[in-house]
View (cartoon, rainbow, N blue to C red):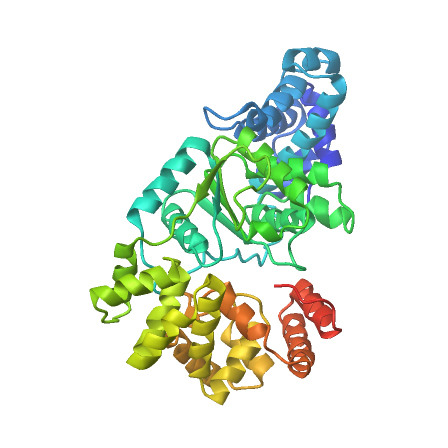
Length: 486
């Protein structure tokens, strides 16, 4: 691998090709069949100089790029290709000599990565698997709402999508992200989870892994070198620089659980301000997500027409009077309408007549519907649902099988029944996730202390086995009786 010290030395000699031919770059080029052995002396130095200039030129961003994106190329060109002294280059670039020294170090590191790529010395392949865009089962598309969200994002490039639980925030943004990922844009979906990845350091680590998978290893290398206490300000700067040069959509889901909101807001603020090709969506239960340079977008409840459309989509035959009553009862909250549809498929008329007037608040309606749906499950399906609730979100059949001590086939069969009961939904890749966070919370909050003491250690063993130590540590903490968090 090429060290940054090597690159610094080569750059210093860039305007003296005769000496550059003695600086090790010629040998490196020959070793990679980029320079014939027959070429020597000044000719070899000139070839090495042209190679370096070409590598610098490849760092030139596209037309229309921000100054932040153009700065590494400007610094390398001014300081080394043109050979300006430090004070001259600082004056030309409009910065202090101290700032230029910092920018020059960063630019040299970028150039080192470019030289390695050109020589066929890529960083080690990473096993990075980005978090997939959620697939929400039985989702009712809302074209008008989607159009308004797209217009808001086009106008400000950062939108805070907010609303109470069950309003359909994640479903709406997932549809938006899926449409974006079908174009040339890259989508980075990140869901904050309490106790696991709700810190700025965890977010920067994930961004570093993303960029390393694109052969931009500076952030990942820096974090690895400086753990457990990287300089967050410097790492944030590296993350913003690394995210530049590509059309991207960042999605931060469950933003309301973030522990270090100021630092995350700072990252978002700088990224959106400095990178014109970047857009971001924050999904939160709270409209006020801090002083972000964007706009709020409140997800509206269903209209009466949408409630009727969802019932029809679920093959629930309901007279207009029942649709009106159900829409009023659920206050048009999509999640409650989904649960009510599942309830109506099995409930006798007298239960419907008595149940709707008896429960009036949103919390009462949700608790009643979840209770009736879970009561319909047999013991085996309930045991698998209880094991799955330990995972706090998306869960795989293999993971649930390990925690429930059931075969994978039994879990697969049960998960399909849970989907039909509207307790879960399956994604495109075969993973299963709870239909909504409230379903998971309802089941998890009713686990006995004995069940928690049994299921959490099993989950810790599973995450250890698949190489996810942060999740394993969370479950060990829960098993020790630490306060539970959703």
